[in-house]
Amino acid sequence: MKILLKPLQILYVIYAMILFLIMMLIVVPFVLVASFFGKIKGGNAVMRIVHWWADAWLFLIGISHKRIVEQEIRAHQPYIFVSNHNSYMDIPQMLKAIRQPLRILGKAEMGKIPVFGIIYNAAVVPVLRGSAENRAKSVKTLRSVLSHEISIYIAPEGTFNMTDKPLIDFYDGAFRLAIETQTPIKPLLFLDAVNRLHWRSIFLLTPGKLRTVYLEEISPEGYTPFDVQAFKQKVYDVMEAKLKEYKASWVVNGEL
Image 1: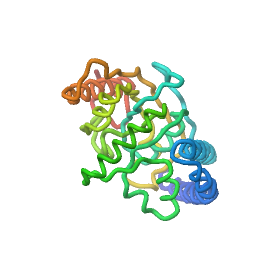
Image 2: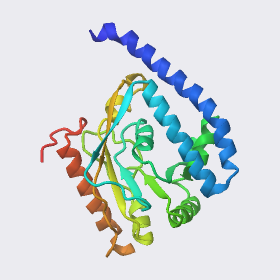
Image 3: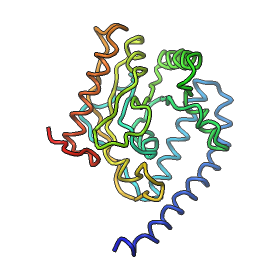
C-alpha cells in the first residue's frame, strides 16, 4: 500500500512547495511596503502578513491547527515564548499558535536566501551564534522589542532534536533575557510538527493536524542573573514532563 501511495505523496509535496513559492511571491511586495513604516509598526504589520500566509498555506495543503490550553495567553502581556523544535513545520505552527505582536529570534544565515530572505529579515531578529558582538546587538534589539509590549519567540534547543528524547539541551539566551527583563516564559508544545514534516526529508510532508499545548507561564521573579541555570532547568523539566504526558510521538519510553 505504501508503494502505491508514494507517487501521490510526491505529487502532494510538489503541490505544497509550488503553492508555498507562489504565496511567497505574492507576500513579498506587501512586506516591502510594510517595512517602510519602521521596526515597530512596520514589523507588526509584517507579522500580520506572515500570519495570513501561514493560515492560507496550511489550509490549502490540508493541515489544521488545534489548541490545547492549560493556561491561556494573557492579552497585552509580552512573553518570551519557547517551544520544542524538531521540524521546519514548527515555524508555520508557531505563526498559527501566537496571535499577538511578536518577533522571532532566528539564524542570520537564513536571511541570505533569495526572496525568502526579504520576508525573513523583516520578521526576525537575526543572530550569528559565533559572533559575540552580533549576539550582544541581538539582545539589545530583543530588550527594545519587549519594552514595546511585543513578545519574543525563541527555540531554546537551537537546532532540531533528532533524538528519541523529549528535548535536547537548552541554550541560556531565552532564560537570561527573561530574568534580565523580568518577562515571563510561556512554554508551548508542538506535538505533531515532526509527523507533518519529519526533519529527515521534505518529501515526508503529510496533511493532518498540528496540536499546540499552551502550558502555564513561568515567572522569572526571584531569579537573578546568577540563577540562569536553575531557571532554565525549571522550564526544561516542565516541558519534558508534559511532552511525556501528552505522549509526543518521537519520545521512546515516555511514560511518567
